[in-house]
Image (cartoon, rainbow, N blue to C red; front, top):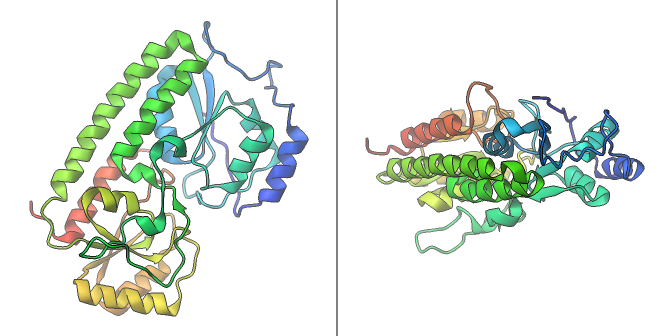
Length: 322
């Protein structure tokens, strides 16, 4: 598996210029047009994915008939990417680009300007604005906060049911590109959907009897998970993990921790935890890792492994019954 690496911050204008310069020049190094078309022969489909859960699904569904490249290395920032001209060329040479629109503007621009063959998981994942997810009070009404989380939440993969929907849709995308192996793609997708259904049941059972429902997290990536399992999410930062929380927001989190009896502030291994750790120390509560799964931190732990580790962390923090 080859991996393409992305540099620090988003540079949409630069990426767009690179795409314009390269448009129509997407031939691969062997001189063909990069379209495996893959009806016949041993040719594999070249698939590029923009976040780790989509890489996981593409690898499982495509199996031996796809070569999956990731736009993000371990420890990368999924929200802020910059595409070099070479990386844009790699995108153009791919048979399929799998993205979540709105998460990475530079990637969205590259796909749109060059007219790449792309599957946007947002089309099937039923995305919602952050304000509509995981912020309800006891009456079920949406609550308001004094910090910004008005953009669409892209982290649908933290809800296994939504990821299962995308799994089936991606199988159809691959089948259209490689009809000879369509039955294999659909069978692989069905097997993964069964695993995701089992994972969803583990979450539903594991979070069914918890004395607390409030989770305080480093950034608001867990709205779909919270909605699915009746939890209440409070983020130190909003959807963008790089947003600095205001003093007013930190004070608000302190009140929530005290009023709701929160025992744990969740941090992320891919995001500097200094603010959350300092806040937890000031409030006298613990910290624990809750992984938003935007990137794969441990090559030996796949999506299913990390989701189960997240479930264990949630159950411990919420005091759920055994």
